[in-house]
View 1 (cartoon, rainbow, N blue to C red):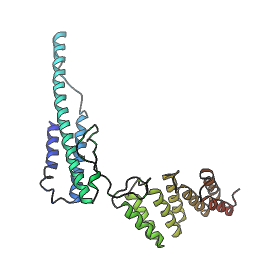
View 2 (cartoon, one colour; view 1 turned 90 degrees about the horizontal axis):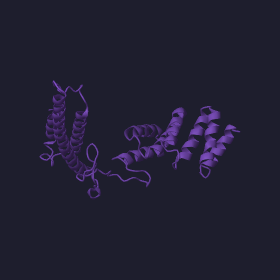
View 3 (cartoon, one colour; view 1 turned 135 degrees about the vertical axis):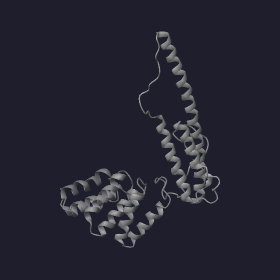
View 4 (tube, helix red, strand yellow; view 1 turned 30 degrees about the horizontal axis):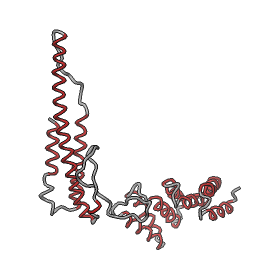
Length: 274
């Protein structure tokens, strides 16, 4: 049966974990997690049909046909119970193994083991075993959320390049940051600084796109007024005066108490906005 083969595959994929625990590297553990994920996806396919059912419900009388239906229902019930138990065993074992791998992953990455919590059961549901992997890197602000390993370091390195006036390096590093950490809580600031680096390179069009990405990434955040102002100013330098005036006027409408408002007002005056 395919489920039996799947159980064997999961067992074989993880059989060497305990024996090689002391020799495992971070890459080994990540690979084990990937293998388990693939096997779970294969397990999910067991719930997909492969064709039309063809039960034997023949009989010469209504009573015989009813008996055949009853026998077929009993057979399917037994088979369903067996498959359900096998799936449950795989989920329990897989969850425990992933919890163990995550525990060792935290050790290798230097995380705080005392903060380990419960991990979610494979496929959903409740499970009280194993542990969840916390981010070992602490966010720099209370509203930034969890950061990936190396995320803050990459952001700081790009910011330093911008501060040093190395605009090309800063623009490249911030673009790579956006690719490496999609959805990062630092993304609005990264896009804002990428726009500033591109402005330093004289690429106003791409800078405007970066400022727009910063604003749309968090249109109510602390950096939103500055991103909106920078976008309006860039549009003005691109000759799109009407759009620039509309954008700059939004700074006062959306953020009337912002420290960026005087800059936006002055830019509107220089553009001759009515």
